[in-house]
Structures are given as structure tokens and as C-alpha cells.
Length: 631
Image (cartoon, rainbow, N blue to C red; front, side, top):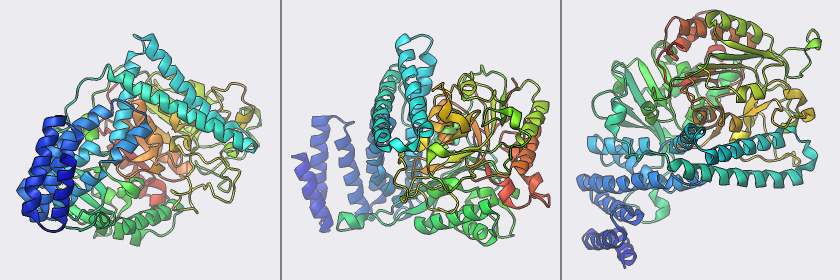
């Protein structure tokens, strides 16, 4: 009956008969609350429908009030549902909320512009939902890891999960591609098994999870330093409450940004159409990565993304940047302001998946082991031929033509040995793993090193739809039907370790020299303060709007790492060594984890040889920016 009343009310609303619609919505809401209880998802739907009716009538006070009530119920239900299910099912579930997110953001940018209540509601909603799948998965893993010593059942579950990840990785990187049909079946079976184990991990960890209340804006605001501003960028579809049909209700995707300082109300601005901004972002990254001219793109993107928010930043010199969509893959430091100066000269940037990250900083336990550095890696496991081995000038993919994951080959990186020696000078207690010792097994056995530095080749292989920039990314093209299409982006990104080139002959299935992002998610980095992937393309991955980049950074966060430094394109071996040495010297001098990188980048920008952002802007800092705690 409530459903019928609701449908009739909607019909009246689209006809503009608001007075007839209102009492019917109220009856539907009353029945739903009485029969289903006040926290039921259908009660949230009733409240949201009420809100959209008031929005259509131009009654913003009532619209925001009902919307807030509906969104609070949805937040409670999200918390409950996220205690179960695999990562994939969590992604599917959160997509069902995109309509109310879009509507709430649209309200604050359109009818309720300059209304502080609507602005706060929109930002609260985004902060409750953006990147939530990542947090839920990371929490399950960390909660369970803390129980391993106490609970044999948990140990067994965890071991099975790690084993399936290893099997998936070995299947894709070490098998000859000729048995593709059989491989596809095996891949599907293993993926199904992994999802089942993920769901079991969710349920098991729920036993130990503390009940949490939905996040409030004040909690995040309290964590923003006085000299900083949180810039939360979100891709949304503008909602038109007065539209007559469903397909007219949501417009083309656009970007908007909310700016929040340590005190005061959040302020929202619309940034423009997503398609246009995405194209600029892709072209900009391509120009930086290849050393082409970039000035015009750097200025245009600044005008589109930063100029509209500059008046809201006030005296902030530190930007806590939480991007979305394609903007997750550009370095904002390399944009140019109206004085034609790089933004790195004006602001310090720290990258976040969402402003919610601020609540996690400083909470992880403090029993880290000594720093570990992997470098000068022997991809062929045969050091005696080193004199004739050709070395690579770039820490990325040489054989870009082949999309066949099983045939990737890497050359040695000459400068990484000096890089490791220089880091050892700065961090005398660091443990170096070089040559044949830089193995996958060694990494998997690490117990939360305070710093983990990997100087090696990184790779990310784009899938077909994501490959917006075929000339730059290694492509899996449809012209090669033999290739196994790998859906999971955490299997398509990884790092090369000792024996990588000889992985098909590997007798030990647990160590084939390939460390995929999926396997990295299973590392123990609970007390780790910093992971530096001094390699190519380590910041890339599949982009999921509203949930960040699916690649190595995501895996490191799931493993428990507090702060990461990753690259957005192929980097020059020599320039990277210079940058890294300066970075560690700055860390040693007590600079913050992100400020130390910025200082090193500014130093390189001021040299003739490395002033092009191709050399200094590839590395971006994410997570906690405070100085390292002494260990």
C-alpha cells in the first residue's frame, strides 16, 4: 500500500500537483516506519522522495532536513551491509547510492547555493561514501591480522586468502599463453574462490569490529591543520528535481570541489564538464610523461580546477587534495598559475583517497622493524654476466608492443645500486636486499618495516576500456585474441623482483619474481610509516569514479601503510636516483614525509638538467604527511 501511495505521489509531482502529492508521501512514510522500522532502506527512500518534492517547490529548508534524515539512515545501512560480502559486492552495493550523492551535491550547487546547511550535508555525504570500499576492505584485513596469533581459524582463512592471490599471480604471469581457454577457466575459478574468501574475511572481522557511528564533518575538520585546506573533488551528475522523466533527471557528469578549512563552513564550486576536463588531464599527463610541451595545458587546467577554488583557500599553503576520476592521475604541482609559476612553488600538496583518511592517521600501532631497501635487482638470477647486460635508462616497460603478460621482460637498472648505498648512508640501520636477495619471498616475510623502499621496474597494464592513451600505456589490444583478458586491476599492476625474467622456469610457485598489487595487499605493513616505490607507473591503475585508483597504492593502504610515494609515468633512472637521495636527506633532517619530497622536487626544478616536470613531477605523496617518528 505504501508503495502504491508513493507511486501515486510521484505521478502528481511530475504533473506539478504538489499539494496532492505531499499527503500521499506522508502516508507512505508513516506506513513504512510503522511496518519496517525507522532504519529501513525503504524509509530512507520515502524521506528522500519527500526531500525532492520540497526541492521542486523551492522549499530548501524542508528539502535539506528530509534529505539529511534519509542520508543518515543510508549511512547506518552502509555500515551494516559492509560488514559482509566481497570487495566486488561492496562496489555493486555502493553504486546504488550514487543517485542520492548526485542529488545532494547538485542541491548545494544549484537551488541551495550559499546555503551552509546544504553545503555541509553535501560534503558529509561525499566524505561518508567516497573511497568507502577501500576503507572497508582495509579494515577487515587489519582487524583480522590483529587476531592471527589468537585464533587458529582466522590463521587458516588468512593463509588461504594469501595462497589464492599467489596462485592468481602465477597463473597470469608465468604460464605460456597457448593454453588460453584452460587458463580462462582456471582464472574464473580462482577469482570466485578469492571473492568467497573475501566475504568470509568480512564476516569474521565483523566479530571483532567496534560499532562505529556514521562520520560527522566536525571530526574531519578537527584534523585539518591551520595552514591547510581540504579540497574534495567529486565527479557528479547534476540532478534536476523538476524533470518529467527519469532519463531527463540526471545530466552529463561534471566535476565539483568542496573546500574545507580548520574552521568555518565548507564552500562548493562547480568546475565544469567531466569529459572536457578528463581530456585535458589525459593530454597533460601524456605531455609530462613524454617531455613534450605542456605549458598551455598546465595553464588551462589551473584555470579550470584551481582558479575557481583559489579565493576559498585563503592563506592556506598546504592543500590536502582528494581528487576523483582522471584527476587522480595528474600531479597538481605541475599546473601553472596566472603568474606562469608551477603550483609546487606556491603550495604543498598531500594526496588523499578522501578527506576521511585524516581520521586514520597516527592510529596504527608502533612496533615497526628497521627500514628495508630493495635495489639493483637481478631479474635474470645470473649475476656473473652483469658486465655484458644492457641496462635500462627508464624504470618501466621496454617491450610496450606486447600485451602478453606472460612475456614481460625487464633490463637491469644501473643507478639503483648507488641509490641504495646513498639511502643506507642516511639510514644506517636500513637493511639492504640487493641482486638475487631482492626476492618476492623476502618482501612477503617482512614484518612492518618502518620504511620500505623498492627501486625496481613497476608495471601497470591497462585494460581495453581504460586505455584512453594507447600511445603511452602498454595495451591489451583486441587484435591479439590469444591474450587472456584480466579483469582485476590489482592483477594487472605490480613490481618486478629477483628472477622476474626467469619466472617460467621457477620451481617454487610461491616465488616467481612477480609481486602483483593483489599480493601486496596481503603484506604486513601495519606499523609502516612510509613506502617509496622508486619505479615507473606505480601510481597508476584502473580509475573507479568515487573510489580512487585500483592499483599499487590501494594495495599498500589495504596492507596498512600510512604514507606512500608513487610515480604516475615512466621515470628516468638517473633523475630518480638524484630525487630519492635528496628526499631521504630531507627526511633525515626532520622534514615531513611530503614536505621532504617537495623540497627535493623544488631543488631539481631549479637545475637546468631536470627542470622539466617530466623529471620531478612524476612522484606524488599520499597519506600521512607528518615527519617520521624515530625508530
